Image 1 (cartoon, rainbow, N blue to C red):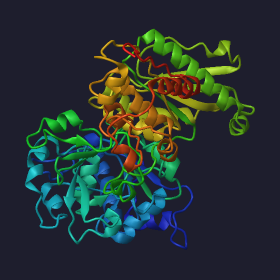
Image 2: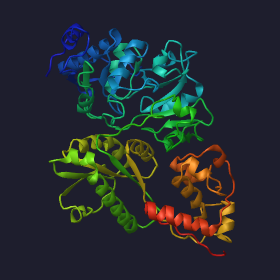
Image 3: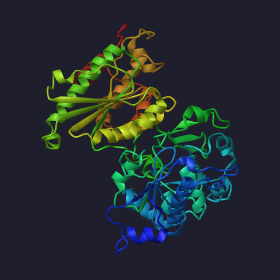
Image 4: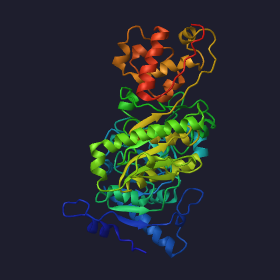
Length: 527
């Protein structure tokens, strides 16, 4: 059991003559979450034995470092490990950004220990009433609320916005540190920016060695996915980042029945909410390991045998591509060649070795439930990048329900490539001719696939230059919206399709089938 140093001793040992963190730090202090107990009012209760006393001293050291210096501290939460600093101290907040290599226009979430501390961060010292029902149900917990900002919160925390993102964590260690510091703590995830979020203390040490003084090790994080960010200040309320509190849970709360999910799959730098994000997770690529990730989007439109065959073909093609690249060749030599597969279902192994004799396939299950998948995702990505010779990781997508929405949000941001394995068959639901169905754009007929195909095959300039090509209901089509694609405004606002059907069919065959390996069937009855 390690001795807990004083704050003065930690600073003397951990800093060099210039005030920079020495090599060999952070100091890692291991504590048990079970050592921290709270009364009904949220006050930390006294330690009951020597082990708890020692853990309380470690939490006190972390709290003092935050409250009395400009140096951030890494500590566990119920979601992922956080890197926290006094939210009122602009200099300390800048050190959080510096340690992570985080862009300064990416705002931080402020963590509080009770409602009174939360209210002190708001413009009128009170939490908007719309949040009361959801606070009653989901605080403390993995839910972040967007609030009007008090002038006491520096703009370095909010990236210049007049709103601040706040949550009350449920993890005992995080609660204890906030309580003992008597300060709201601004804390992003405790990893290097763009890397997979840390769910274990060793992940933090890998990324931030030599950058921070202190790491409190409270064991693995149970949730594994960051908090849900909810904006109840707009109508309808919007989930700006899916997380541990699911959209289904939010919509079950009074006043939030009509909550929408902000740009579920979008990455549109022209949107003001993206170019100037009000919360984390809205602008920058995140969660990417050093090994490229290829995500296979889940499809329910085809048989499992058909999808498995197409998935195998797609994986083999990408393996060949990565194996032939110069960067992969340099990375692998002389290591064995390893392909990683993260599964969310139980399936038989793909027989890659019959095509690539020197290839080793390492598979790992993320779990049988969406909650388990979320808990294990980031850790599994880091595990694969640590495997010598691993040059690509394939991830099997999940349905976007419950925790699956947050999982897919994170995997898409981590992925170097996203593969859509969709095999659409005629449904015989066209009433009248295909041309008439295309012009109406009604329902989910085969004809409705055309706007989606158009959107995915062309950039803005290419699409708008097509002679006579206009798109049916492209702004509201569910496949289009779900994929998060954007086209220039004059294209999005078009309401009908003008293009010869036979020419369109030829276009789809050449552009879609040959280039991307997707299969689309049009019911041409009535033409």
